[in-house]
Length: 260
Image (cartoon, rainbow, N blue to C red; front, side):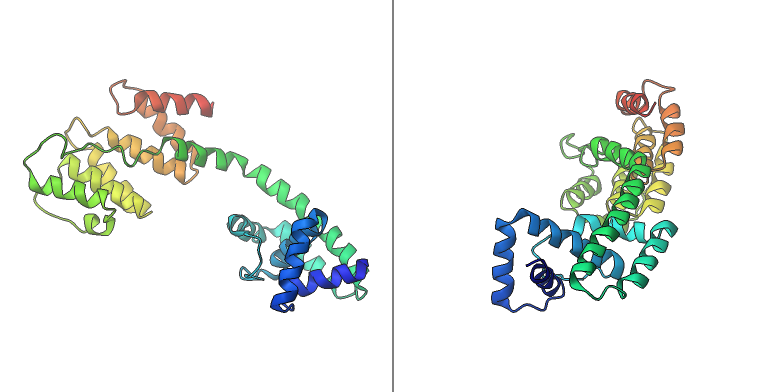
């Protein structure tokens, strides 16, 4: 029975089942949680050991959220050595039952390393949590609501609301040093994940003689949090907290307190 079960798991993982067989097997997994866990376990192990992101792409299990973390993990020397050991020794297990037990053993080793990896990087994820909580790219000064007669300002806001970021970053006119122009252009770069150009524009904003110039510090802080640059973020927080008139002073104070 155990051998037959393992044979079906391997056929499923390697796409060796007919459509009818796969449908029947997947129905069995829905009714048998232990079988489902075994399939997920072995499917993950195959993906880790084969470095194949498309391995069994027709599986009913969606593992896309784990893909990037596993990619980073595979670059680590520790898991690399473990994976090599597992690959070299898997071929010696010809008996299906023994091979099934070996997968469980190998998965245990990988699970321990995975746990270590994610714990070690938990601090980084905390910083991205700050970014998700405080990023406010839609809370930009509304030029339309202020009733400005400057058509070019109204145009750039409409472009931003329509998510035409590529168009915005290509804009260049006699008002290119205007604070509002710099805000929208810098944020457009940020939305395109062009961090270098976003920071370049926000630096221009910070040095702009405008009431909106301190927004540049806040936007640069968000980018540092997004990139998990905690120490640099702390230094910028201290700078923002030197003046209560700085944009989002209270939010910066909250982040600084949470980081301590």
